[in-house]
Image (cartoon, rainbow, N blue to C red; front, side, top):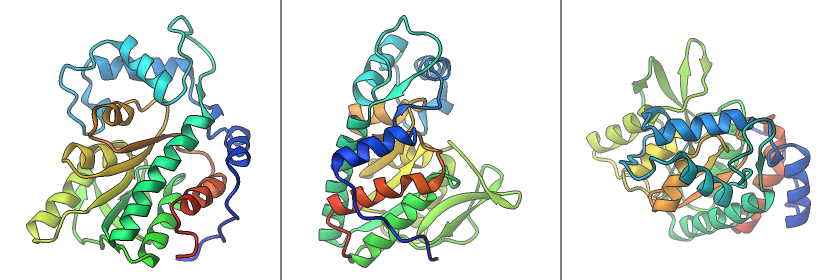
Amino acid sequence: MPMDPAPVAPSRQDLADHLIRTRIAGDVATSRENNLDHYRALAEGDRYYWLGLDLGDRWTDPAAVLELMAARCGVVADPGHRHGQDTIDAELTIDALDRMAEALRKAAENGSRVLLATGHPAGLFAVHHALAAALRAAGCSVVAPAEHLYADGGEIRHIAGVFMLHRAGGLVHTHSPDPMAEILDALERDGDPQPDLVIADHGWAGCAGGRGLETVGFADCNDPALFVGEAEGSILVSVPLDDNVPPQHYAPMTAYLLAAAGLTGA
């Protein structure tokens, strides 16, 4: 599937400026009210917000969730800030991209088996597609499509190396861990090996990390579970960003990530 040509990888400062200008980071679209509501729901044990991870009774204080999100994502740390604008720190985004790049570099060096999936087909598919193509070119084995897999009233589809959920004639936004569970269960049933590395978001990442698979992912500031998972060690890397801006805005970020991983010439 042809995509627009990748731009030249930006410098760290140019990428930070771009992330802030396009609101991938900086003053993001997600409101403070929405963030705090989600942190509270996670702390109250609402499994929807756990994204497939098992957090037990370890994160029952919303203030602790906010503290973690301020440190790992860059939301406003002041608990008295209850309304209006919230933020993602572009420097934390780039730091996490550098950590993700190391995981990609390792996968390429080892010829690893990699699985890619996204619950944000209208935003992050372009990123995952580029990563799938680069990793395949570097010698990785990208997990192949599996037919007749269903979850959440939809069909799991595989397009250009990336798993997504299809329902009612279109690819859908989903936080659910169930599609990833179906894929991993199918691999086990068919006697196929589990992936060495999962690159995903939302419940696709949470489910994989919860099963002990090495998982890197992208997460918005209103999706605290993957950052909690990173803090606990079940997620290797969570990159903080607005996960649903127009897809072309992610191209410089993707170019930076591939260059940092040594995959630009793959």
